[in-house]
Structure formats: structure tokens, C-alpha cells
Image (cartoon, rainbow, N blue to C red):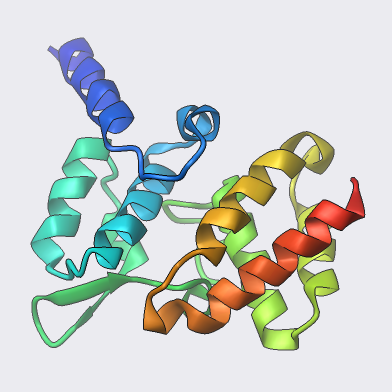
Amino acid sequence: MHRLIEQASQVASRELMPRGLDPSLWRDLGAHERFYLKGLETEQRGEHRSGVYQELSKGFAANAWHDLVREKRGQVACLLTATEMGARSLYTGPLAGTLLRHVLMAVRLTARTAQPSQGLAWLQKEVENFDMQHTKAIILLEYLGKQPLPHWKVDAEAARLLRGTLMNAGV
């Protein structure tokens, strides 16, 4: 039974890949990373009900999804932006230690300082074997940089700046 549930979860996750995201990156992501990225796409369509996040969490087997969402006025919810996450849950929590979490922290540092070199330094220092993760980080930054949501404006711009810096850094 457990194996059947796991297989169903894997099929659902493949089918739920956000538009515009590289399939090879998607395959390498964990449950909460997939939940987060799909949640951003869901928000772009104007969906902000907490029940939608709950359903997404089931599809991805992302049990700690509450740590990634903030609720406003009852049933209206949205994912935390990189800035809102701050340094929380960097080493514990659903995204702890993942490339996405490190990229979000680098975006936050870039947004806070207006210096993409700060975000780049963070990634180079904190991401194990960063030279092997470089391309994946660029893909994540490209996706985050395309967020049209008003509450993502500053972080999306920081993601674009950081992506450009990363591409020119030639790790």
C-alpha cells in the first residue's frame, strides 16, 4: 500500500510541473521544493485559498507546507517570499538545506543589499559543491525572476540581478 501511494505521488508530481520550468530540474527537486514552485504558479492564476495549498501538499506529499505559507484574512493565503522567509528555516524546516532554500536566501540578501555579489557569495559559501549546482541555481533564479505577483516585485528583481551575476561569474 505504501509503495502504491508513493508511485501515485510521483506520477502526480510529474504532471504538476509548473510551465516554464526545466523538466530535468523538476525531477531533482524534493516534495516541498515542488510544492513551493507549483504554489507560485497557482498564485499567478489568482488562487489564494488555503485549501488549494492543502490539496497541493497532498499531491506532493509535502506535509510541512504550513511553514511556507502565510494566511491573510482567514482563507486568503500566499507563499512566503524570499524576503518574508528571511533566515528562518534555513537549517531546519521543509526546505532546509535544499538548493531552492539557499537560492531564496541569496535572493533575500540581494534584495536587502542591492548587491547581487552578496547573494553570489552566499551561494558559493553555503551550497555544497556549488559548481555542480550552478546551472540549477540559474534555472531557479530565472523562474523566480519571472514572478509577476505584486508582493514579489522586489524579490523578482533581485532574482533577475542575481541570475545575471551568476551567469557572468562562470563558476
